[in-house]
Length: 440
Image (tube, rainbow, N blue to C red; front, side, top):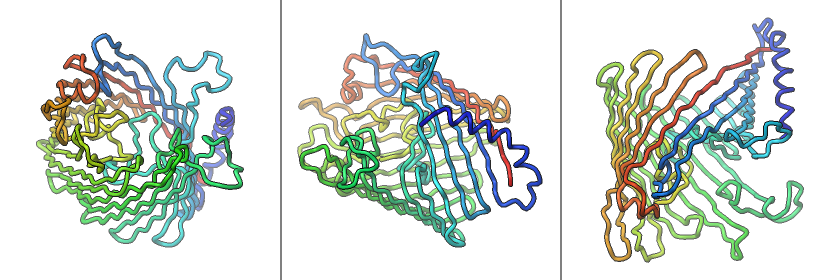
């Protein structure tokens, strides 16, 4: 993408904003533009995985710069375009003619059309965010976020919502082909979407203003045409959720089952169970207890069926500890996970929020080091967080976490000389103003 188009577009829109905003009564078209600048500084002394003795910790600042534009014509047509630059401070030259990091990308670009009173369709690059983001999420914690190239059809009536997604992906660039390729099909997950095709149905029924029930049915087709014997392997995930709140109490329960074959062609039979119960102790203080169980495989497993549950494209940072030891692009030998947790949050003032989460982690199945059976206890994590609203559209958030790991975890992570205490500190500035809104 030619990055100099963006400032030219911004200057044009800003220069015409007053004209567009004049006499907004009886205007059918709406346009708004927002900007997000979100640098985050991190001290990583064992984030993601323990550091062995002698390994150096990391200190860095990375940044998201995202420009989002929304257009709508009544309720008939909605268009969104969101472009972003993701970088680590210092990667780009002082005199930057082009972006050498490849950090420019399109986060979302879709058209949303009203087909009838209760039916809409959305086509293009879009985030898929369902329920609490356990299986499909927008991954806002990550600087780049997560989005899919898909077609969505959504039906709404009364208290019921049904949305379907479908996608069929190709990746010609790895076969030295391009958009004008006249014949054949080619897909590899290398530097591309991880699946070739997706079919998804999500049913949601609102039981009351504060509670709902949902069902998810999903099929993913995996393929890699770089392999000599390329075949498509289909993985199915089925699940249901309940989220509810009544007076000072709130809770949720989720269950999922996976079958079919994973991307490697191995048969799958796995499940996830999750539940929590929360209570508002006082107006500023909330407490919740809960547990998540994801099935796994013994480390000395010999059969050809995988019992390791894959939480797919959820926002895993939200669930399994903020230090991201599990299900965030780093393996723990597919042993699954039992995560029991207690979470506290307090709104100290209108501008200040504090949080404290603690997790006890266990493997979901047996761990063997050769013939020696190890304990299933993996460790204990503590996450302290804060959020402070400096002014409208500007906030500062941050936190400190530490992980007390065990020998079994170090074995699973291949970090046998790591210290038992690992920690991580982060602080982030989030500037997110709406810079233009007009009716015309």
